[in-house]
Amino acid sequence: MTENVDESLQKLGIRRITHPTKDEIRDAYHRVDTTELNDVWESYITGKQSWHPWETYSPPNLKVLRYSDIRVYHRNSVPCQCGHDLTVERLSVDYSIFEAGNYAGYDSTEHCYAFRGQRRLLDDFLDRAEVLFEKEEVKSALVGPVGISIPFSGFPSGWKFEEFAMHAETIMCLLFLASNDKDPLDFEGLAIEAETEPDSDADSDFLR
Image (cartoon, rainbow, N blue to C red; front, top):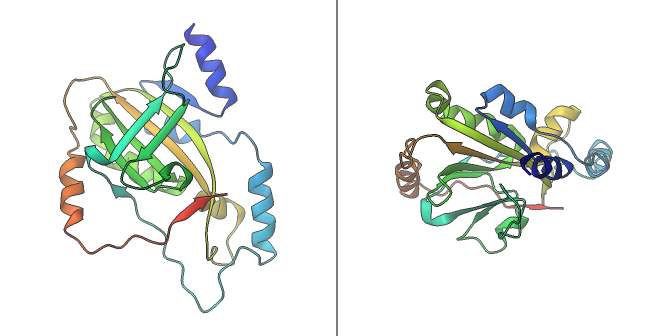
């Protein structure tokens, strides 16, 4: 049964890893369909997806959310009652499943840490969870694609393909914990602290 579920998830580009390392999670990302990425890359190198020279691109940072603002849906067994194979949603934002995201948080119901955002931000998320990997507290992980996301104003010109892909590709990652400790990384505290700082969010990126 588990093997069939994993095979079904893999067809969607979703990988499940037991007791993963950070490198295994990074390597787990799989492009299901390269056509869309190649199409937007072609638009980029021909100048259709580039910023005007006088504008400046500010890459979004990873935003840490409170418990009440994040919800995770995933399929770990059949039948699935959630209606999603893998989804990370921000509850305070309407239609957040159509946005790139660029956030992370702790889902107290699923007892996992969740990430959704530009592929380049995955390292930031994993670095924040470093202590969990050191203590072998990550029981399993799910990694999967979301889609291609381009800011309304486009990207700066001059990037090579991989740098472009790291910004354009949006992915999700769940880290399920082995212990019963609630939010051992204290993402809730980090989120509350960030709420007192000036809002520095970049303009929203919508999936294409």
